[in-house]
Length: 333
Image (cartoon, helix red, strand yellow):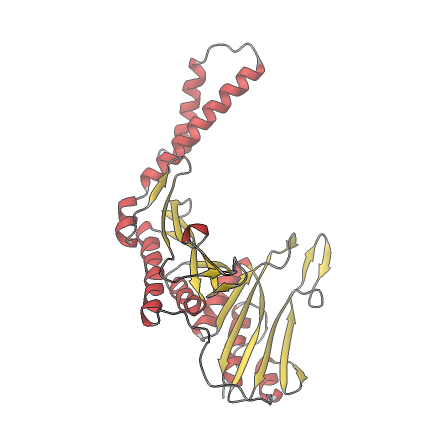
């Protein structure tokens, strides 16, 4: 089968045979650069032509735009359904409140998609679950602003597969946003649930048994920390230097919160996210903490509500999936 690369090689070869003898190396270099540019544009257009852009429009319900030079097709829409005020100024969507997904021809699959999704706090976790359930990867979750009301978050997505599959997944993500807003036009500012007791009284024993280690106890709270060896600039780093996964419990045994941070490799990020979301744990940030580390480590922060033992089992599930805790299975009641 002919590939775009093969076509480019033949294209360049034919051009080379028709090029007059060049007098200077500069001229020759310019000529080859021109030919290379032409061929790259041709490849990009070939890739784009193989994408069913009409199908992407139909499935997503949006009219996309083709960048022929890059061979990418992008659908986008502004988050103008909720007024956002940043530092006292009502922000037009043009200034950075646009949700988008861009499709291009894949190498290991028919197509690849990347995108950024503008979300409010009560949309993040329902939308993340839909993305993960439909084959998309969630690669980052963070803020872009300070003093924004309501608070705005940006969730980056990616995926490889059939064009129809990817476009359908993107559409489901966008439909979930609409569903959340239709139920509550004004973004919510709480996870809900009953108030926590004023005095913390978490029993460490059951949690120690679940995690297979002794947690740090402080005024009725319990915290577990697991280091993750890595190197940075050739220097060994671990738990004390900040490469760690931790879980802290507060409240009472029956009415508790857990918050913490997971340190995972790139390959571990999606499985651990899925495991925690299935267990009802809220993800509140996904980002990096370092540069030039080996292996590359990504961090995600989380928050959960419920009975302390249930929360511990949920976190332990993430530890097991991520290979961070060498035990056979969660302790059963």
